Image 1 (cartoon, each protein chain N blue to C red):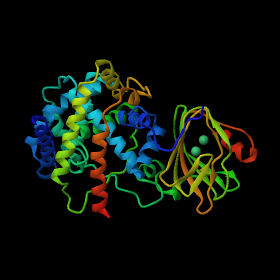
Image 2 (cartoon, rainbow over the protein chains, first blue to last red):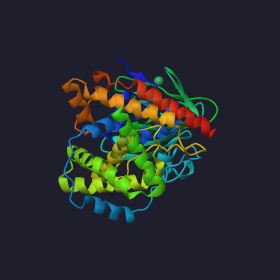
Image 3 (cartoon, rainbow over the protein chains, first blue to last red):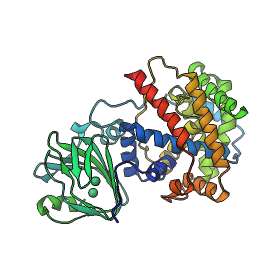
Image 4 (cartoon, helix red, strand yellow):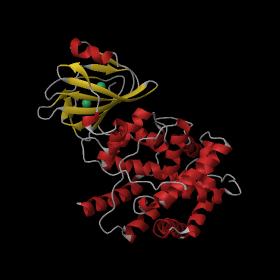
Length: 213
Length: 181
Ligand SMILES: [Zn+2]
Ligand SMILES: [Zn+2]
């Protein structure tokens, strides 16, 4: 059975709210929420659940001088800056991870103008940026685990629709698809996977560099 | 109701911390939330010493982030939960967790009181609904939030009553976006 979704699922948002996702998935969710009010609202709902659970917890004993120690800590702490909206292509959480906007990315060529850059890894999970020239195909592939693809620039089309900036596609093991960058702007996506992608080898020369990911 | 008044009082105390560096307001927030934050951290796997340390850090962060709190989009308990969760990840996993961009305030810097009241009421209703879930479901949700369980279907299986609070938050966001444009 094919399981493919075009909005971020409740279980991933709940996992993000609870803080149990791995780092690459945290990054994609935080970046997507920065671009989507719809996802922001659902996330806020799950965070409200967390708040209700916190409120109902049996209190733990705190140290006798806990408040005094906290006041001392406050005095020695810098004020928290706001994580303000970025003006570039990359939303603020991605800029923080990369160390800047698109210009700061250390791309590795995949041939025929396609590029990729690993942004962070955590065990089996990886977040990477993929750059596909307008009109060009990503290699057809299926998945060994979960894959989240967030569009940051341009758009891509696959078997079930067109995805533009801010749109996210969630694919699992059963999905076998060939995303193609739409004409117009080159397509940049942030992709998190928790297993290696399996490529079907229709475009072996392009696919090859992906296999080592 | 008494519960709604309490929610509004917490929001007023956070505002007093933001605007007047009000130590009495902070002490009241601390007495109520610090023991809960510490309990949350211990349930999430921290020992008592680490939980105390991390809890103090959470409460100090609250002081410094008080000016970012928006009572039309989250209850104080929700907001403190997010700070505690983020600090937990920072300290236990030793990296700064990715967080979404903050939304700026509208031009007049103060959310509408009717919005604030409505959001706080919805939060109270949600908390009440969670409290009255069958024991088994409630425990399942708690465990998911302590990181004890990564069960992907909890949200669907337990049928959390999230509809009204989400529409409330959506309205607050729409007003904010409108004020910004
Ligand atoms: Zn894929
Ligand atoms: Zn698709």
